Length: 451
Image (cartoon, rainbow, N blue to C red):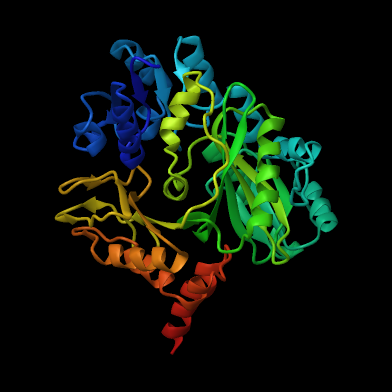
């Protein structure tokens, strides 16, 4: 096992990894920017190092500084969390060259899944169903031909993208030029790669993902699915496990395909295979996230498996000691973000009094504290609330009760929107798609304003 783990992240996920290290009895070191001096992941760690100014390029994305801290602190492994450097193959190679163990997959697996068109080709070869689409497009005329071949509506997507950045729906030929140029510009700005491609836009799909664990000895398992269809601007805000759509047979089929996808690239550690499911219950490979997911707690709640501890043990060379487990009960996660509940725009500020509930079937992963200033430099998520119930309705009811008791005085949060969704009849019925918020929340507000 490792002597010391450096946590190359911030916020609630850094606190989460710190807790796993403590449970394993492994010393851990955290890093922080000047904006995070009073952050919980700094205050709760026995050892923490300042790595730079608030902008992520000068701190949390500064590979050389992070590796220098690892050397100075005596760490022999690095856990990247999610976001930031977690899916950067260059960083993984740098860790290896420095004699450090990267707690995650190989750089080769990252490269294969990080470039979306390469991932599509690999999955097709492995017999994994993919959404009809194109190769990377050189120019607008090539995009126009591809769109006519695939058939409108189509989605323009960044080849190296993620998190909903560099994506746009195109309903007809007149919309294609603007979407093509806009997505190329955004892709180049955010990912350093302006390559884009087209996919058939599935109307009214659900976003369902499978959690994967794979060791270094050829064993790969899945730990069931997560329903991630409740999204705003292509980013998830409510997740649950299991999905209200799947039955045992569909779960088995999707699980087998997810395992096949992971094995096709010799994947190790924790990963997530994401699918879009159409109204006919056909499922298509969307992408593979080669890291821990924000929504991993709902899987932990229905399986009892600590995914971060599993990651650490796999990276240390231990074989998987568990098999695929059936889901037990139901779990829901809500992401609490510092944002205006009407516009969904980030709303940074200083938190005054902070009140969070507690209970036996409730878990809160929080990255802030009273007096902490939510910075405009980082993702606005401040906490995750996770509930468990014997069934879906119990888990939802527990979530509404928990959100009622969450108080982040001094800043605006999206809690009102989360409650509005949870109480909506269509959500209660499980009749959800990736367009749920725009169709049932945003559109209803527009209609009420017109009245």
